[in-house]
Image (tube, rainbow over all chains, first blue to last red):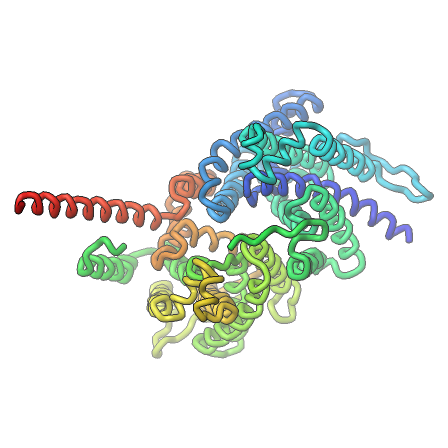
Length: 291
Length: 332
């Protein structure tokens, strides 16, 4: 029983990070039809930016700020201006392929300019255990969970409660009408790219202390985020959150109770089942068919 | 490509084929390996081009079919079966699995289909890695023999390169015939407007499944050649990145163009090798080159050529019109 509880907490903590990444992924899809195959690498890179800042002598807190700012410039602004903008009008597939190439580029750049070895990364949450309901739970899991939940709540509040958030949603749902009623659609799209960059930087900060900083670590993360986004509903922020938590828990439980060899298969089979029987996702709404 | 005069095109094709036969004769071992790899990947990419470029069905699982073909060939040939028999089994197996994978395409399209096939790709990789009673697990299968073709041993790199090249030629002819047959037309109808195709009496259900099955079968052929080429296989080369690479080859070369996969495979296999002099930077430069190309021409390399020729044709046509008009005026 205690084992199950631990697994659930650890699963929720990883799932919350997946949720952050998946939310960013769905935001990009909604506003600009970008399927970002480099999303996992987007999570891997900020940790290295922060490490580089620390190697240059910056204290940890400053490195975090610099890392987040740099990510927003590189993975938000530059990504949109240099890759997405010129390709957006040519349809989904060429852009998706270009992001695959970008993923290779980021991985190789980190390997070349930083290191091919895994580097340890300091945790912003103190390590150790605390007792909850008679169970020892790692502070790190709790801290990750709390921070991720705060970020997600902040984002949903921004989207649903503020005028800016409403404008962003309008730009995503119907750009033409949004433009007519005076929403600066271009700026809103740029904003979603910046938010995505912020979310991945945050996810990077939370997950890297657990799995170490390595140039290949984006592959698994990116896939988990895809699956979370689709399982929850490709066109819904809350769907992506639910999907992230679900995949995190499912993954951990599968590893413990089904088979460690086939743990990666469980989310995949789940994904296939969801796509076949409820393609709009567990919480999503159906997309209209063109043609 | 229709802008060139036909004899010129045939001459150009013959020169390329002759070059592919003659030039590698004094290549070293490594050069021949890379060129053989190009031929093998071109076969797999051609299969994907059929599924994606002609029939319009996105698949991120072509690498898994290369894996299925490779394991079928490796297991059979190490148990004493001849390679041609293994190729037949690889085709049958990939065809059957591809057919089944086509079923989701009847329900969902575009990115959803991409993700179903992506999940399949990962599942196939897990099977290769975990079912060690069959696949040797992470240790893989070694000492895969190269075949005797018409009594000639192909264990040396040059003869085996010719096996790969010959297979590529056979597959190319078959695909060339297929896309010009009514089937090819039906595939294109499926891509352009499935609803209209159906109302014109094309059995879209059957052709969707066929597009997947035939494309996958070519992946199987490529795999069955890959195994004796490397003579050792383990699960790693057949993970998701192979599927992504193959997709990249098709798009970069030009999806829906017959010659696209040849060029795409050339870029994906040879360009990194040419960039090797830059040492650690070569994959980075490769990634930048691919992105740059796609920004410049989202329809791939042949898209550029196609646009150029279309422009030239329009210009030529308007020049002709102008001439005709002035003649008309002088007559009056």
